[in-house]
Image 1 (cartoon, rainbow, N blue to C red):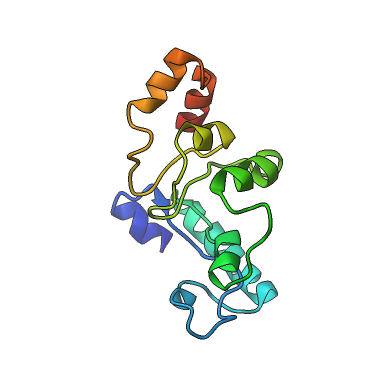
Image 2 (tube, helix red, strand yellow; image 1 turned 180 degrees about the vertical axis):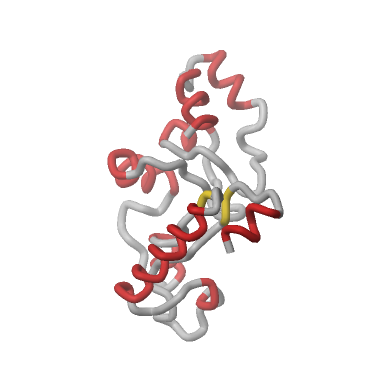
Length: 149
């Protein structure tokens, strides 16, 4: 897969998927992952990431906490991406943080909390990022971090 994506000019594959897949049979996204068994899924995701990255394509492992919420088990304190990023990923994650499609609900607060990229686009950021730097609600170093991570 990595070679195919690289030939097509893809820089980052939006996957593979991890999370509590298949816990509810009606789950509309069960097809995106490997297994309902977390150990088995972890082994396959690990090998997939290694293979794709070996071809020079980045990976964006996705949908862990969000799937818990989709399956009806909401984790208290993680109702927004800002809470998730700031309290969990801030100290544990070295890569960049990207939303799922249409999942950004906060503007500058989400960037200050650690969100780096919005998919497929953002109506909340746009020129607001430079405005936030100009008025002091966001540090220029945070924008540099977003662009270079």
